[in-house]
Length: 135
Image (cartoon, rainbow, N blue to C red; front, side, top):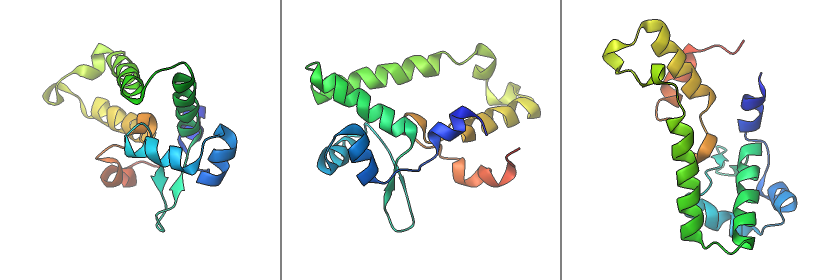
């Protein structure tokens, strides 16, 4: 398991995240309601946060302390996400008709590995996870 996988694993309950970030449960739920974070949910609907989620919450807290409002934070985080997505190599921007089976498998595997990062989950995650075995 690589570091990226470990950082994306949902491990922390809201109580632990409150201690780590010094935010209240209400603040955390508010950020979730505004789509700034998207913690995983258990079958019992309990929130579970990853290291990436905790980092995002700390980043939001720092931006608020610097005087940014929620709209500004949302724009800034969306811009960061856009920059990250634009950094994808041109090779992966091919149209699906031009992809080889190996390239498609690689893209899907990468998509599954990064699911849950940046506050979004892949729509195909549930369907395709059964085809890949962790090594």
